[in-house]
Length: 192
Image (cartoon, rainbow, N blue to C red; front, side):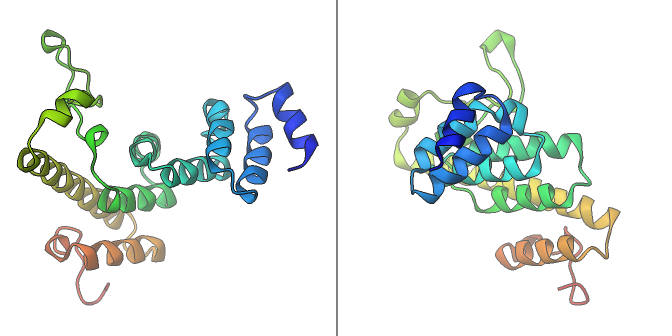
């Protein structure tokens, strides 16, 4: 690791370019958890830089934090649904990321029940108390909801630009993993 990277980060840890350089050096040394902490220090300022964001989300996923990556990709999709790279990344995460307790979230805010949209429906204790069959049922339901969301995103992208190679490749990959959704993403033999 270069001492100048560390020194720059120590002087201004929230500057994304300082964090990016140091995180890359830490990753090259195999220090993924240290790199994650460095990237998180600058995520507010760096999340709008594609290179920083992609590295940060990659490290989050390597640490098993798929839900962080999904939330960020959803946030970006809401801001710019025409960003093909982000949209394809979101579809890939929705269709492939494992489903854990943090993935099972409230859909709406309900103040009477003290529920906040996007927050986990279960505490760790509640999740642990579910029997295996109930937990699997909830995970399958969440997987199905994610698959429907991914299919909708792909259909919207294809409607906007049916000739984009990036979109068609992403849709083809999704269709191979989820043949039941090929029709809803308007994939047919001419596009596959």
